[in-house]
Amino acid sequence: MLEMRGWLLIMLMSCFACGGGQHANARRIEPGWYAVQFTNARLDARRPDGRPWHTSESDKTALIIGGLIGLAAGYPGLGLTLGEAASEPGGDPLAPAPFIDLKIEGETYRVSPVGRTYAPNWRQPIAIDARRRRGDERVIIQLRDAVDESAIAEHETTLGELLARPAQTFTRLGAVMSLDVVVSPMPARPPAEYRVVVPATVRFEDLAREGAPGWRPIPVWNGDTVEVEASGRVCPSSKSECFDANGAEPGRWESYNYFKKVPHASLVAAVPGEGIPIGVHRMFHVRQAGWVLLFVNDDDVGNNSGGFEVRAVVTPPR
Image 1 (cartoon, helix red, strand yellow):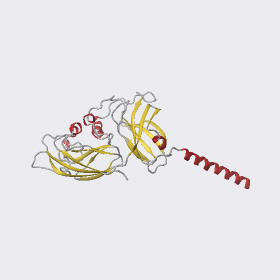
Image 2 (tube, rainbow, N blue to C red):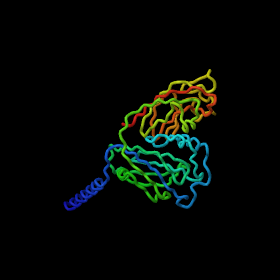
Image 3 (cartoon, helix red, strand yellow):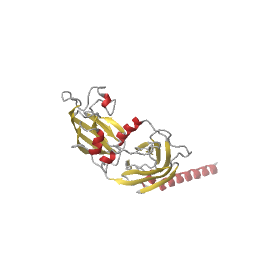
Image 4 (tube, one colour):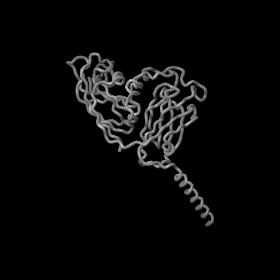
């Protein structure tokens, strides 16, 4: 009995030593913030089983709304290239629309699709808080198709391995021939305040393409909190009937709205990955990096007048 207990003790000590060795061999992380950017990928023209990715074009309406919201996705540190952002992305209408989900121990970070293509070129980074990370956290990189939400490829690694090099390429991930990623440290960011003039006389697409006096995109990173306060009035039909940033009565002039279930002539925003009604005051959390693009919920501006004066405060996570 004593001999058996001795063997059990030796085996347990061996297991503890083995586990401790694996933890010690994990790549250590220098505490801080990191910007992780998946930049390029190359996909096979067909699925692994030889079938085409798609056999018909998807519904145009979803792509139009997705395209407007997609203008807000990008690298906030580089600024919005207005004319380029509003250009038609083109691409193969039967190709997938690849996007990325990065999963770190239950948390999911997303990089939005840039169009239907076999060679996506993303410009949207992810801010990773590694101040309290060990390095051995499980990381899953998923490439998915925005057309039907299907999986394209998946790669598993650790956070330490992902952040270890400033640039690396993953190869032969199923239907993905290559996936490039760059990593860089991020400096601490203080809260920032922005003043924006949102005219009622300029359509959203023209704001994104050409800008307007006093209007600007507001840079944000995933995890930021944004608080918006708006004053001023918009007159969408005649100067005798004007509204504050909460807009007109529900249902009125709805056919002229960008966002159909949001009051006409109200203040709204395109943020990375979604559209948000703002009104006279709103606080919201940003899930992807890019810009907050403020505009009036009216796509027929020919007889409009007025506008909103906006104060926005962006607060990074603490």
